[in-house]
Length: 342
Image (tube, rainbow, N blue to C red; front, side):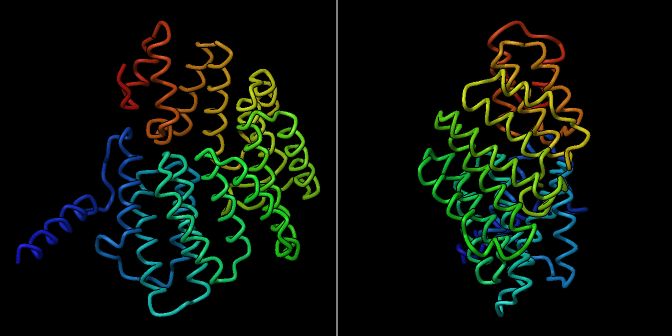
């Protein structure tokens, strides 16, 4: 009896944020934690599953649009619900289409976990995505699972393993048989390996692989491909990659040059524009250009307020600015809205 009461109480607590309209008017500084908690519970099979819908592909499209637009308040409802529904639809058999959609949902969750520095949950989501993608025979999702696995290995400091995962996946023969999309995935995987070399301090190797990714993008004719997998691959997104890669390799001047070559309006999503502004803010910080750094962070907030207020990397930069020099009303306001204390 005690056990049943305890489980009932825990279930009620878990369900509470989902009552009413389903969307909580949460403090944006806490949206990341809310989203992570709901995804964790959905992955653990906790909470009440929504009725499985045959329109799950439409639900995924909407969740992807929320991610691209940095609408994390909406995503905190939609993506966990999508994962629960996906499991309900695949519970009684290995439906190829549903397995593929659930794999993509887990990959979207992984991208969110990476943003929120939730590596343990990221490993779990990526492994599930890989298994589901292999069951479905979805070559693109298998390759994207490998890319996310390489990202997580790099974050863990396993640089050799991250390189091996990304480059082995890029060379897989299956990618060469699916046309332009396969080439674009290869480009994203090469970029991932390039960034790992940057983190390892190998500037020449990073630039060599970045040039290889740029060559692949050029061969594809300049179109933005893979919006529903890696967030887009094109010559412009390779240029965006250069900002963070040059920063990590220790050359913020080269990173700033790369940033100047980008038109933010041409980037394929709000999420990509926000990421670019975040990378540019880091560049200014490393160059000691404090005012430009704050100005860029404020531009990022105008572009994507929920991401700016929720993302740990941005919070860390704001916190550093608060203690490293004179503050301004604008910086203190941004810190307050982001839940950062001096």
